[in-house]
Length: 313
Ligand code: NAP
Image: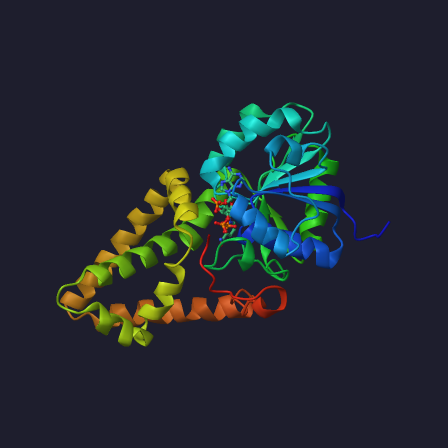
């Protein structure tokens, strides 16, 4: 048995960007013995098969999770409650159940009540992604050099936790532990509100009457283009993020609106000093992001599949 092997049987529930990337990374690094892939969509199952993401593709959730040592929920977070309700009774005693959902308190709320005591539930969130979605969008290096946040409850089995940490480290990530509440607040400002801003500015531009949309597209290199990349992210996944991290997002949006009003006022009153001061501070943050190695590398798309722009089926 390889020393890299962390779990014998892995069940992936959801085979989109994150699920398919976990499958490819596990294969490349020998982290699991067998991969069970589950998605309710027959069309996605066929794509997953053609990409050889998993070893078996059961048609029922019960079959998929039965006998798995690690079950990873990788569907949109709004689906987790129903998945847990249907799958819980089929989980093997001693199995670890984790997820990759972008919010954590709502996931604990929706999943935990369904679980038997003999299952180790350790919620998680790899801070890695792209604006692509679907089974053809994954790539094995997605988690390399990224953080994965785990939000175990107090009293969690320490061996199960250590093993899940080794799993993510085996895929190239560093692991950080946090409470679900802390996670949701931090991610509201680092991920959720930035996505909302991108969705909003692209929608605002699309609705303009005084500037045509062809002009917006033609001159997009002026800054708009970078927002369009983020605003192309999966609509269902992001709908569920906002519905399930409401309080933290509203809190951060309140702060954001206040600061935006201050900038608006500085522009109105010609307060160049304030503008320059803010822009200088933000430039320093950008340098810190680069220094911390958190600038997105170009995904290694070509190696594992064909068309990175293929529409989600
Ligand atoms: P995605 O590419 O849209 O994949 C989601 C997959 O889940 C799709 O294949 C979808 O199938 C499937 N699915 C839907 N309902 C399901 C169910 N009831 N049971 C099993 N599978 C189901 O999205 P993703 O980007 O991989 O996101 C998956 C999870 O990772 C989300 O919880 C998200 O919050 C989290 N996450 C995303 C990112 C990111 O940047 N994208 C980063 C970190 C974490 P259909 O298409 O047929 O509905």
